[in-house]
Image 1 (cartoon, helix red, strand yellow):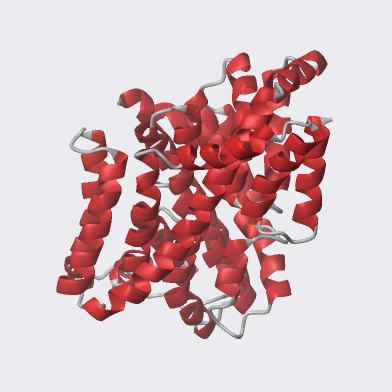
Image 2: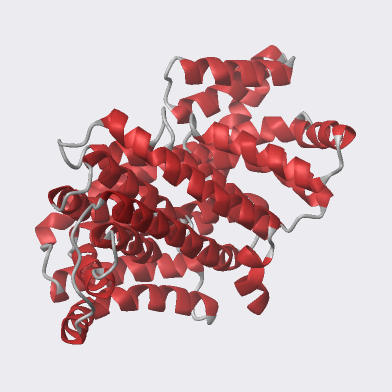
Length: 427
């Protein structure tokens, strides 16, 4: 009765369009009432507070702030210019530049929508003007933005590490190769379509003088992920401290070096970061109550028994999990999904003997791909709003082959351990 109430109320609230944090918080309260355990309603408030009492969580608003500063501070422009000088000779040059720039920016911001806004805001109009279809241009920027959650630093990895107790540094390392592979397949797709349909122009070759000039201009932007990730893996500072370093570094580079922002702009930038962070933290707080009910009712153990009773083939079980998470990504935001599904699936994964860090990478890849699948598709809406020439239906049509290409990478990472664990094993 308790579990039925929990998931039925959650489903009803989601269908009628209730904000996700309210859905996750109200569903367990309805379950308490169904269990005639009203006293737990008072404990729920305490659990919401204790859920936020973690130094690891401090990394989230700091990475959000760093991404907001760098999106406004000219760093994205420098990255785009360097990528164009390096890859402008390829067929589909501007498309490849968009993807590679998203990969660079991903190593700075840790946020998918921020990556789409920062890079797509520059590249989508340029691609359309260069002869690329508007729908394809927006779909490519939205798909490239997913990499913002895979290549470290990554906010979803911080959430997964907080829930499971796994090392955030190892999760960051696990996301590097999968993120690069995602970028490569998107570039291959872009080159293929550009050659087939004759989209876009390209330069004749690499001009070393221009590359050097662009590199010198972008050096401060390039140094940022080196400092952040190098500091984490060298043990100089923790991921939380790295987030603080990223915010300060991004502020100083944008203010003093690129001079794209002024002190008065920080109020608006900070306000946007606070709104995003508050939404995430509200979800984290309410998800703690949801996880408590799920654990107390032994849902993970019952699920493990059910699945293993049907099949003990780990290949089939992982395929089922991937399909469930991909479908869920169409309807639920990444942070909320992480806090709902991790407590349920993690014990099953441990029962299978599957590496928990590898599963963290697989889970984040699954859930972030929901950012380009309607009806949620946050990245699609962010990219769609950048240029009025983009028609949403055409954008969705063009994103389908990109989604399928990313699925190939997802399943490769799921079943081939070295793709996610090679760098982790080297640590």
